[in-house]
Image (cartoon, rainbow, N blue to C red; front, top):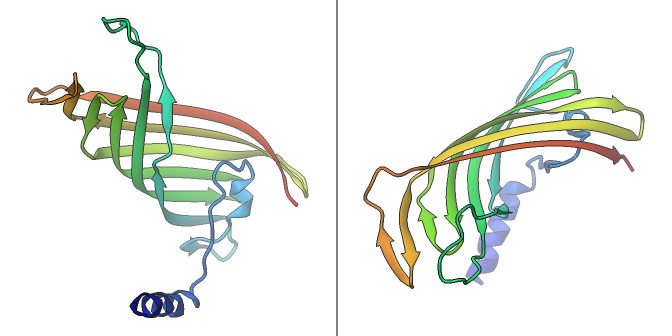
Length: 181
C-alpha cells in the first residue's frame, strides 16, 4: 500500500511535465531536438541541458606484454560515466556538446578506480537532409585521469599508495544515415 501511494504521488507531480527522450546515435539529431532552455524569437539557436549515464561501455584491448603463467587474460576495460551535458544547436543543423561529470574505470577483474573528474566535447553535423532522409557526422572526445585504488592479484587486493594515474582518452567519429518514418 505504501509503495502504491509513493508511485501515485510521483506520477501526479510528473504528469504535467513535458518529457522528451534523446536520440543518441541518430545522425539527424540536430533537426529532431529543436526545443531547449534558451531560444531566440527567430529560433536560429537553442541551448539544451541534460544528464547522461553511460555504464554499458566496454572495450576489448590487446595486451602489450603477455602475462606469465600462460593463462589467457580477459582483456577488457569498462568505464562508467555520469555527467551533465550542455548542447548548443545552431540553425537545426549543428549540435555542439560539452560534457562535465565523473567516471570510474575497471580493467579486467584486476584494477579498480574511484570516481574521477571526466570531461568531453563533441558535435553532430547534419551534412544532408531531405524530408525523410538525414545524413550526419558525429565527433566525440572524452578524457579522464583515473587513480587506481587497488588491484587484485592471486585473489588478494593490494592498495596502490603511489601517484600512479591512468590517463583515459576516448575519441570517436561516426558517419550515419537515418530514415524518418
